[in-house]
Image (cartoon, one colour):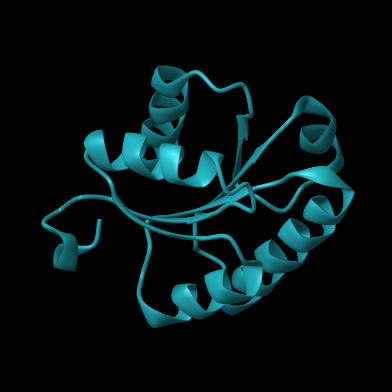
Length: 124
């Protein structure tokens, strides 16, 4: 956990869905996480280099989303192999990828989403 955030786990959330990103961010903040987020993968990388995160959470949407998420994951893991990364995606993407440490399913059940994030952070 990052001592600069009052012991709240710090999460970088990258999500290209304009309506969903702020909802997830708010749910995570209410649940005790320190959240930075962006719509753009390139801005997410800049944010990643600016401060440490306990978890990088990347929403994977659409065919280009898979490629972009894999690229970002690979770049982060190459530079910092110990960085915890999770993809938020559907079952099809989950079986096609091996880069992230964890997979969160995309069904939008706020309690299940927070529980999944909390389990990932605690487990690692």
